[in-house]
Image: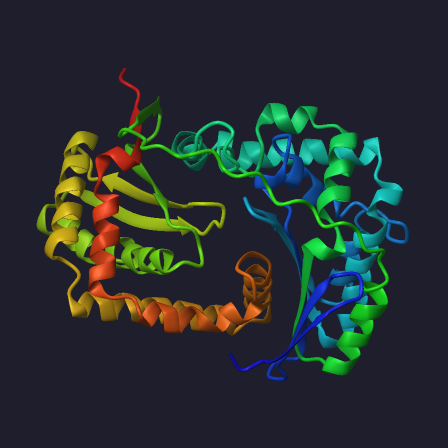
Length: 418
C-alpha cells in the first residue's frame, strides 16, 4: 500500500488509522463499530439503528448529516453486516474537519435526541427496503433461507442482517437505545481517515471531536456459538413464476484464516467469469448451464458463507444440473486445479484487490474491517502475499469439502406447474 499510515489510540479507546495519500484531492472518513446482526437480541436491531444514526443528534437535525456532506459534493455510505456496522463519507479534502465533527457528534450525543417519531419513520423505510431487496424480487429470499438452514437456531449467523418483517415492526426504542449504549462505544469503534490531508491536523481533529467522548466499558465478547452439525444435504424448494435457478450454500472457514484464502481462490477458479474450469465443463463441454458464479461472505464468528448460483439452460432439469455439478466438482477436487488455472485465479484476485485499494473509500473500508475484526489494519497489506501462498493442493482440499453433499444446503427455485 502506498499510504503513509499512522495508527493511534485516543484516550477514550477509539482506534484511529490515518492513511495519507496525496494523489487525489479527496478524503474518506469511515467509522466501523463492532455492532452487527450477530450482536443483536432482536431481529433487525442493528440495521434499524444504522438508519437512525442519520436522523440527528444534539447539534445535527434529522437528515442534516447527509445534506452537509452532499453540499460539499461528497457522498455518504452505511451498511450493516453480520459482524459490524460501517459508516463512511467521501468528500473534498477541505471537508475533513466537518466529517470528523459529524461522526463525533453522533457517537457522543445520538441518545440525546433519539425519539419514537424518528423510529416510526425509519421503521417504514426499513420495511420498504426489505420489500425491495428480499421479499418482492426474484430469488431475493435465497441468502436468508440458506443462512437459516446452514446455521442452527441460536447461532448468531442464523438470520439475515436486514431483519425479519416482524422484528423490524416490533423492535422498541428502548431496544435500540440499549443496543447503542452497549455497542456504540469508543472502545468498540475504529476510525479511518484516508486521502489527501495533513496527518497532524487529522490527529488533532480526531482527538478534538472523537477523543473527548466519555469512555465506556467495552461490550463483553459474544457467547460461544452453538455447535454446527452437518446439514445432511438439506434441500429446499421454492416455486413461483420465476425461471429455474439453483443456490448451493456452503459453510467456509472464518475470514482471516489460510483456509479462507484458499476458498477465495477456489471460488474464483470455479465460478468467476467464463474462464474457470467448472464453467468450461458445465457450459461448454456439457451445455447444461447459462450462468454459474460463486460469491463469498467473509465472516469471523466460526464460519463464513459461500453460495454457488447456477442457472440451468432452458429444458435442463435442476436434478440434471446438480448431478453434473457434483460430478465436475468431485473431479476438480481430485485432479483439477492446474498451475495455469491457479495463476489465472490469482491474477484476477490481484487486479480486483488493486482496483479496490485505488479508491480512498475502498482502502478505508478494508483498513477498518481488518483493524476491528482480524486484529490490526496491517493485515490489509498482507492479503496479496497470503493469496500467493495458496497452493493447488489447498484449492483441491477446499473443493473436496464443497463436494461433500452432507455439508451443504441446496435451494431450488422452480416455475410453478400450471
